[in-house]
Length: 103
Image (tube, rainbow, N blue to C red; front, side, top):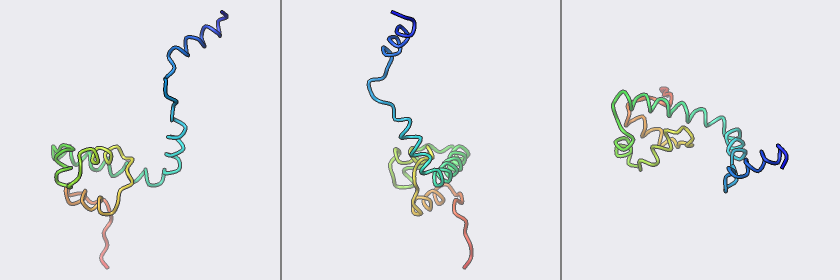
């Protein structure tokens, strides 16, 4: 066996049984980049406030009336948040996400 065939053989031994989805994930991130930036900023604001308040994901989920799994998804910064959800986050953590203006 030549050197390159031995290398290829060794690489195949460590190959994953499931195909990689890195390309699909990268394309999804590029397509959704505009709102993902906002989602990530909100997640960082939430994490900072939760740390300041010594609040767990479970405690926040109970205050928001949702599952801890959903809060975890939001805190990963990849959740397309509704206005209702942002309003609940603001109320539960005492932070301002959306600008307010007097009409």
